[in-house]
Length: 219
Image (cartoon, rainbow, N blue to C red; front, side, top):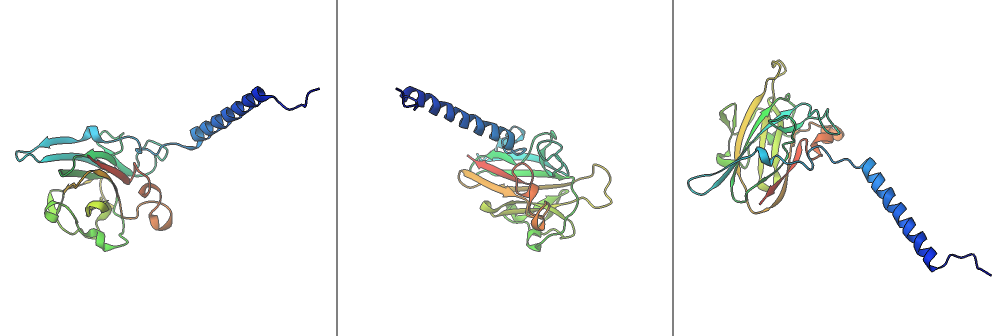
């Protein structure tokens, strides 16, 4: 007479079958619900120009655009930093430790009111300046600001000038600044001017890597 309970081998089959179902369910859910943010896994490294100066100092230059819509990824209508090819996010890149880094930004976005005029100050750059359309400045008028390029770990914050309301199609403003890296590690940078969604404009592209938020790997 049998007890109606499965034997040891049967219990193993049931257990393995149950585990496979759970794993398959997890994979399915992740596949449906998890979609990497535009730029969270794509670097701008191949767009960098790296040179060694006569004194042995490494100098990296990266040229980026701020565009009003990235036109790709899960949030194609969001604004963001891109490389000049127009298809690669410009917020994730690598630079050498204890080196100079020059960022050139062409800003195609409009002007945005600041929450705090502290961010009109150019901070942490070589010489304490940035160049706006080739003109050196230390403070930007709050009426001109659009975004910032801020790296808290390095004490760097540079205001980005926006295009005026009467600008012609495809107009842009050009910013250039240089900063020095410290030791190795991964540091975060982002725009501080509220240009996103949510509470006080600090959501959306301002919080997501690949748009107005990024990572710098210092090696």
